[in-house]
Amino acid sequence: MTSNKYEQAIFAGGCFWCMVKPFDQWPGIKKVVSGYTGGVLPNPTYEEVCLGTTGHYEAVQITYDPSIISYEQLLDIFWQQIDPTDPGGQFYDRGQSYQTAIFYLNDEQKQKAEQSKQALEKSGRFHKPIATKILPANDFFEAEEYHQDYYKKNPEHYKRYFIGSGRATFIEKHWRDK
Image 1 (cartoon, rainbow, N blue to C red):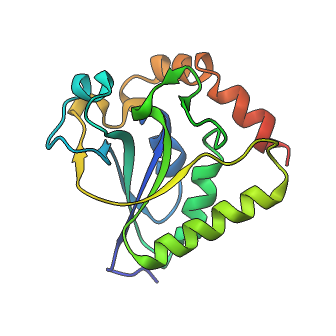
Image 2: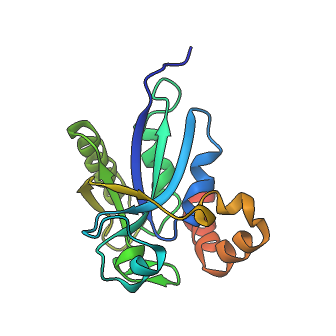
């Protein structure tokens, strides 16, 4: 049975192109939107965010059915797409707009995000501190259309980027065999 009450989650995991596909493939995910959040400039453009002056992160906003997939499951998927120990960005994308963060929409999400982060820190999987921030959500601005579902629209370029950035190797090394 599915619920008509959908919820949202917002995660910043570096380049948003690489954060859509991992969520898009799960039952219960209704929509994954690439966008910008966490900053001060309303309706930023990709170029403005890349300059690093807006305070925005590249992020994904996920609309999901909690009767099919839980927020905790979304957190697990999120952690397995990133290097949570890198405070300066993700893979070869550097700068504040590529840093990782969990943007919580309510106290329950905040508590679950903090518990998830603590569990990862205690797991011993990583030998450096977890740098991913847990921040209150604010306005989410949808990215330009050409960024939406990039992995579907440009599969070959997406694949080259996913591999060439070092993300694929990192995920394989730290998550696939564990």
